Length: 231
Image 1 (cartoon, helix red, strand yellow):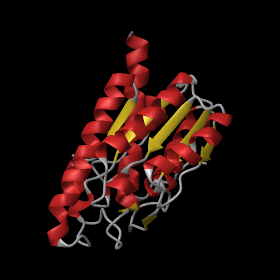
Image 2 (cartoon, helix red, strand yellow; image 1 turned 180 degrees about the vertical axis):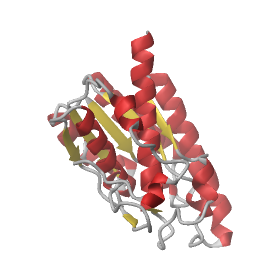
Image 3 (cartoon, helix red, strand yellow; image 1 turned 90 degrees about the vertical axis):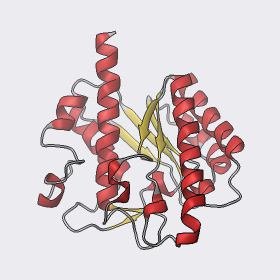
């Protein structure tokens, strides 16, 4: 299940270097990796010249399996799914899989709308993280890229979208800190404003964005492993 890295990705300063994931994930304990959430979790996106056509969660799963052969992977993420729907329809099936590592990428679909209810989304994210953590899983929470930089987003909508995305990131960061979850914080990432990051629909990332997301997630997991080893 290994990902073949192309020349474009190998030269990208934000992507994993050769052998980096293997070093970061060596000896990891996880055997059942489950992903829940919206289109970010599902992995929608457009091709990027010079990057493999692989969604980010698939890439994380591949790196986990390379470091620990036999690591199982299930992705329950579905596009156009609000955080309350993730909680209602994906939490139970995910728990049934008895995961020991869960990635939650939810709330982004809510934040695309001006009807975004920050308190409600925060409650959903906390409930998801608490349920998975209570079942013994390590939890990864994700704050998506600041898509207000996308050329496909009309200028008059950018400020509002940016405010909602940063609000969601702040809430996600606070929940992760409170519960001891891993937080992959992509919202302030320096690549957010660069060309080639966003799909033509203005809502999803290109495979370059996916490659960067996977790199940040692997690095965050590596940091968690180092912290445990030191503690």
